Length: 233
Ligand code: C5P
Image 1 (cartoon, rainbow, N blue to C red):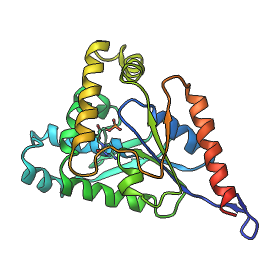
Image 2 (image 1 turned 90 degrees about the vertical axis):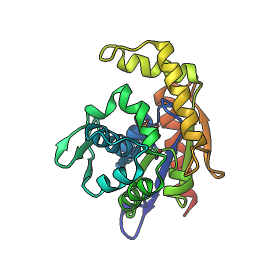
Image 3 (image 1 turned 90 degrees about the horizontal axis):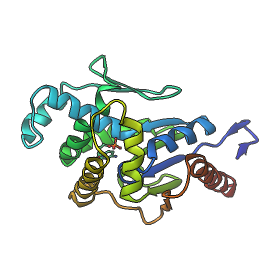
Image 4 (image 1 turned 120 degrees about the horizontal axis):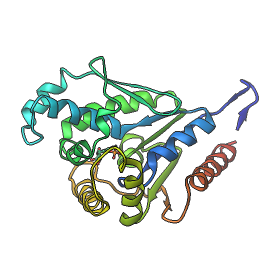
């Protein structure tokens, strides 16, 4: 892993994809921290767009208005210790984009091809100098098909709803049953859309985390990463 001539670590890009609530962001953030890589949460970008469009009364079905409004939209992701800060046109929207309402609407905007292209270009630029852990739905298949390590994280719908429930039950009024229903609906929308649907890349390692804890998943991915970087020597 150590580049003897430069005395630096050779960095790779790591793509982590999977359905809602599979633990991608928690795992990706911790993997990035352990490797001193940059974490990029692409779901936050789709959420930021959704927050902006909904705030301006622009429906996902009005594609022309959505695409027009994209020209007025400037998204910045600022990596932080605990969370990645999301700034939209200078306003910190980090906490506003995590509501269940935004979660439910994001997949409708995420279906719009030209909108995806704008965000995908930004994501590729962020990963251009390597050393990035990027999570989303289409990272291994479309955004970074050359990523050296691709992980597809899954877990049962029940387990994913339970995890989300524990996260938000104190701050949002929602039942576990409603969350299960919402997560299953979001899976359907993300898996069945025409452009960049949620699918495991052929060369991705699939990890079912239903009965794994976060540390186990993180350690497993770090092991894969070490094997990749050492194996490349
Ligand atoms: O990952 P997160 O749940 O925050 O993503 C919110 C929504 O954004 C997803 O349900 C999906 O519709 C969309 N998304 C996407 N492609 C990505 C990341 C997220 O379509 N790379």
